Image (cartoon, rainbow, N blue to C red; front, side):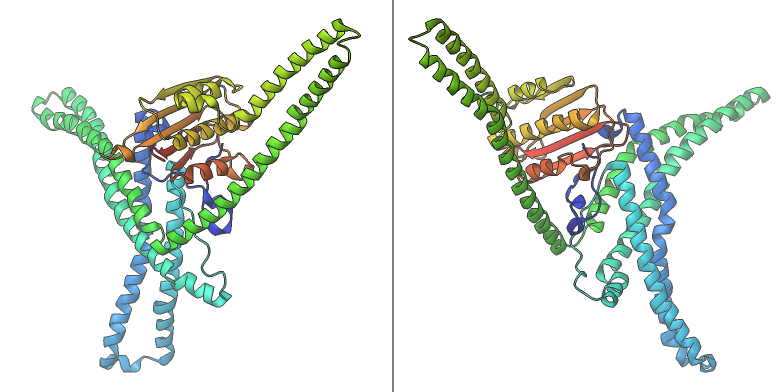
Length: 464
């Protein structure tokens, strides 16, 4: 199964898989809580380190605006008379062309770095729309690339990300790093005071020993909220304008529709091939066996009985093969008994040990059950083909997202301990999964770091 997709939108299919649409579930991705907190702290410290770089584009634009302000008033001053035209043209070129162009390029680089960071750490990616400049000439495209609306939007985002990095990273630095360092230093101070014998000086170190860890704990508790605000900022500012989102959505619908048509045609050919090569041939053999038995009923009753027995055996094999063909369509157990009974059946056919954990008091809509069952079966097939896993866990639960029960989600997750690090372009079937989940307005999440297994999560509307 695949790890994720990156930016591509209309430029290729790789951008069509929205890996994570919600806030980061760091604990699920990185295991124990302490490890997740460490990842969050390191992420915020990195944001603090990058904050100054993120603020450079805005600073350059402030410098350009300041020069414009001086240029408006400078000609009225006596000392401005001695300035040559060449120097003025050079200033205009530097402050009104070079500085804004460099600021736009740096802002684009800052947004690219931020996308890659959120993608690598939390699996949060964004699909890009079709290139609106594809029909323009090179000069127009270069101008829009440097001075278009997208560039100014990225300057705004890089500035907001820089300010957020300074605030969030500063909080983590003061509370977690400084608090922990102060507590450790205070311990050495206590040892020094005890050696010196000045017990009156223990108040300060003892206070730091108590306050330092408390500050570090408060900072660790705040890291999840600070990361969540950063992700929210990313989603609000770095994602495109509403009309671009609509265009991107239309591209998704068009491409997913084409892929679903291709998938339906491939499934039809598979069924036709299975019926022709399997059941049809066996039915032909069954017909020939019954014809031979009929011709020998009078002349050789014993041989006719043997042929009838053979025909019964072939008929059972035909039935088994037809069940295998129909099993991939919609199993009867899913219709009659629901997802809780169908998932163990699907797990029993997997070549690796599968643990099934279903916590569903009620049944979702039949469409939601069908999508979840399809995702589970395809995910188990991917595990068998690509993951080289030794164990798999399939879990299904109902997740409440608001006070309205109709807004609940059916969350299906498939976790394996395989090699991970797969690619949607490698033919692992994730585009088909995404198409099926997206068709009911669900969200498919895949976390697959190399060497650490894969976690696939499908959030499907309960009343899909």
